[in-house]
Length: 196
Image (tube, rainbow, N blue to C red; front, side, top):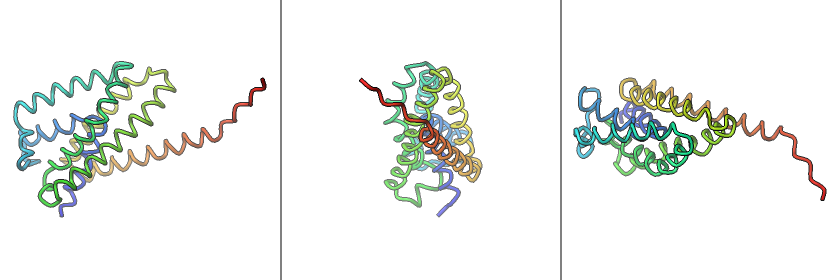
């Protein structure tokens, strides 16, 4: 089994949890214009100009929708279904992986990875950012997520071990953040009971 291919697949599906279309577009463009990734049937359909054009349009829609207050929350609800599906597709389509892992298992792993990243983003990180900044930092956080998604997607194909390292670092940061948040809540004094 190709360990680098596995790292690549996990990095791409984690990236899809942040932005569904960036890793799909990255894979499509790299497969179309380079020899870094080769897509077997039926995944080679991603290199079609129609699919690439559709992914560009969807990427732009997601980019702008995620920067507008209130619209970004609706976008996250819609993306709850799209991002895990994109993670499943990109995991299964990743070079060297689909030939050695059963497609159903590959898609299941991609679905779980992208779904976990999206769930953490939508249910933990974004609500905290919105609550602590009144929503003013959501656009900046969204832009940072896009940069991370592009970086991890490219690294996952070009240097899969680096993508795996970035994914592990993000996971460690997230766990640290969640522990810090729960301790902070536990240290807060309880509100005094009201007497009627």
